Length: 331
Image 1 (tube, rainbow, N blue to C red):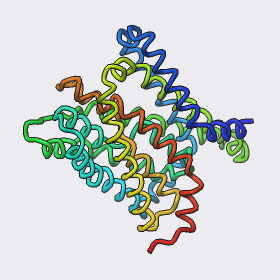
Image 2 (image 1 turned 180 degrees about the horizontal axis):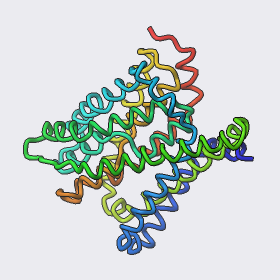
Image 3 (image 1 turned 60 degrees about the vertical axis):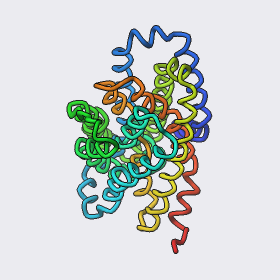
Image 4 (image 1 turned 135 degrees about the vertical axis):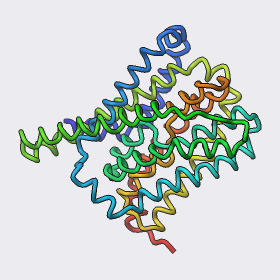
């Protein structure tokens, strides 16, 4: 039953995503006051949902294998290059071509330098990617954010001085990574100890179902909470849609080709793809609202729309990408 439900959700994930986007947007416009006056409550709800989305994937994570990744550091190093060299450089080029408002430019760059959306591990798990690679790479990328973020923002203009909230970053790592990893490992060991391995394998589709349902809930909440802004700033949204579409297409193409050239396996590739192309919009919004105009936060507020759609489309291309990595020939 769980396997059938998991396959159904995976097959129609894009359709369900579009559906929850519409529901979230309509409800957000109808109940804008509810969203505005209960921001703290919704923040706690999102935190819980993020945990429930990542936790099932962490149950499948065998921590005993993590140390082996350092024997093959190539995926992790590539993820750092994608996030802190290629991504900012590409962002600078797109800003020069399309975004002439300094505050929007700052907001766009701010988003693009903060890798690892809260859903990146969920996408990795759904794509059959290497969770050990994804987990280690996500942790190391997060640890470098406080160093790389001020450097790149200063490069955009000497007048921008952005304090990096280390407490917020550590809290994000704790919620998205450490706690789900710890609890997931305990759960995994408990299941294997109490039942046979066959029982654990039977339960794996259930974990995938929970992740997909929680991911859809987060998408709906994003649109619910940001509906009035998206309606009011629809012109900006169109411009950001164009820029972000170009960014994601180029980044996904670059990552796929380079990973193939460096002979990563399909599992390793999927372990760093969503981390390297998806951005942590929640953290970007939090940083933007600390000392900037609301205009700086708009890119982080609207970009999840297109990020979700493109990453799910990439997820839907799983079989094509798998064949490319297994059978494709790089010249």
